[in-house]
Length: 171
Image 1: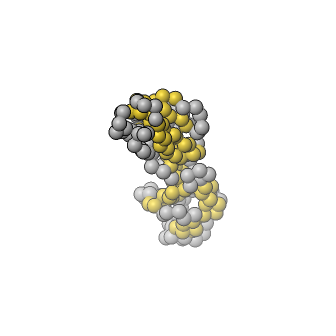
Image 2: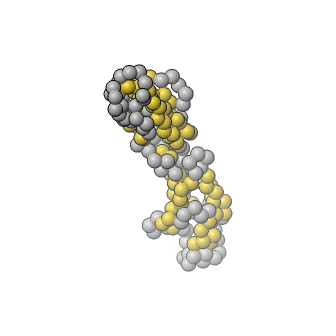
Image 3: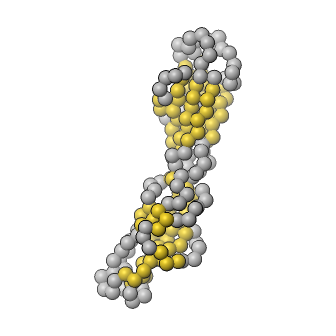
């Protein structure tokens, strides 16, 4: 009979920006004991590995890691795990008003586009002038009220679900 079923574990939950994820694996065989493990990534050939295994650099996207556990009698069982990698920052572009435009009102609605092709946008943080950043969720606009005369600065930080971020300044 083959070893006991198992699921490999990774150092990532959901999306990650780590292009060299770590995988741990272990199981038991109640009759003959475990001989060795073999691993493959994305359909490559199997190679003998030990746990923990640190993957070579992986591209962005989904990666399936399959681990085989062999017992001393030559029986094996497979376990697998999926890893999602996104190493690119989201994109953000101010739409309205245009950067550097003077306004006459004491309030102004700022709008922008935010995208992330792989893991998706997780949240947006905004800072007005020298105030602290505050989270505004997934909003794509914000109205600034009670503006005094003069030049003002706005800073957006857009985060994706893999912990990448981009900072965009506007004045």
